Length: 245
Image (cartoon, rainbow, N blue to C red; front, side, top):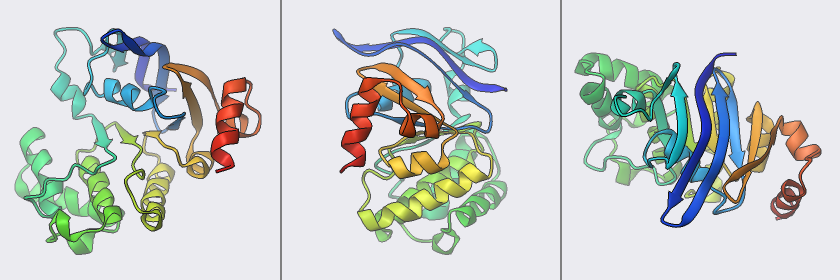
């Protein structure tokens, strides 16, 4: 299996507080990996270290055979290969929907406006937002904003899509529309790394589930193994708590 990103002995501290401890972890091409765990377990920090929004304190991130934490590495080029979808959408309020999906392509990938719009329209159609290309973010619901954010990330045609709790800021009735889009993307063979508290989604969609606890990977395996037959006591406790809510 081809590894898209391979993380070795990754650590991250904020001052004296060690948030990630000796993380070994990889994502294979075409794989959907869901990271679960309670708040403060290091899930989002791991995602932010992978795309270098946070600089790891130690370890290696191997991408295409090279450690991208080496000083001579072009982290901007690397970042363009990772699509990122945040909790809070992070859309550009001064651009309409189409503009949001075009600006990065033109600026970073140096695509012409016509080419960028063609790509953007393709992905806006995928997420069901092609009817709203002239709307500004403030005219959209939370679920619609998040679908635009997904289309924007896809328009950069990344090697892997990172999702940081993409439904946590949404009203309950909008969660489904975003998860449906993500499920379709997973079925299309896209490589996805998803931090989520939607256990039903992780069970249905993931190829592999990673349970994080107190800055370490406590357990990983197939959804069936993690949800039906976890080996670690803390995994069992976490699932008992979350699944009975």
